[in-house]
Image 1 (cartoon, helix red, strand yellow):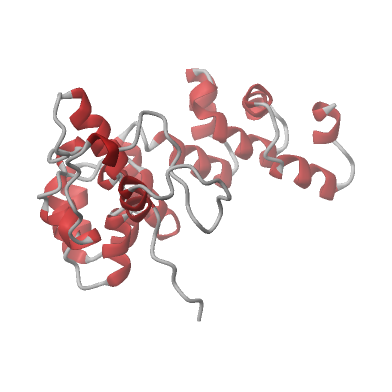
Image 2 (tube, helix red, strand yellow):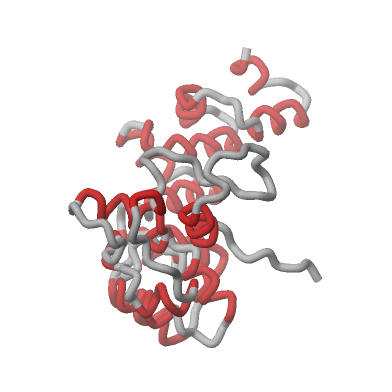
Length: 237
């Protein structure tokens, strides 16, 4: 059925199909060789499911939008592709947000203050540069650092549990409770000293604005986890 809808004569039908969140990953991957550029562009969302030949073909696609979409996926694995994307102002910010970076490129962007908020989200950014961005004068940059996954208290708890500790003093990826990055981004938090204070494995982290359940809402670890995983609401201007 999806194959027929993909070639529907009505553009609105084709667009709605490509925007659907319910497409099977196998179908998304199958669009890599479709004759319509819009379909090939959408197929990059199944990048890991594509063969090496299909990825190479998309990176060399005659349509510039398809090539850019493919490059923004490949840059997660290849710093050379990221370096190429950084030369294009239209793709630089997104490449800094998601791409694998050479150390020299990262340092240059910090020195030149190029898309720092996007760079602060990059998972491959060296820890010392993350520390520098954590004290940046721009609030948006500091906010991006505060939302990095390695600052998640739940992950820190899981890491220390595997090491046999109970104080929560050592976090994963090198960011512990004593880290300057952690302190300046989220502020001081009380230590987790009792087993009742830490979440059991697999326990959901509820948010009072969107969860109607009552589990764990009165425990201290729930408040701590919510503080670490929920950004501060910002009023729209």
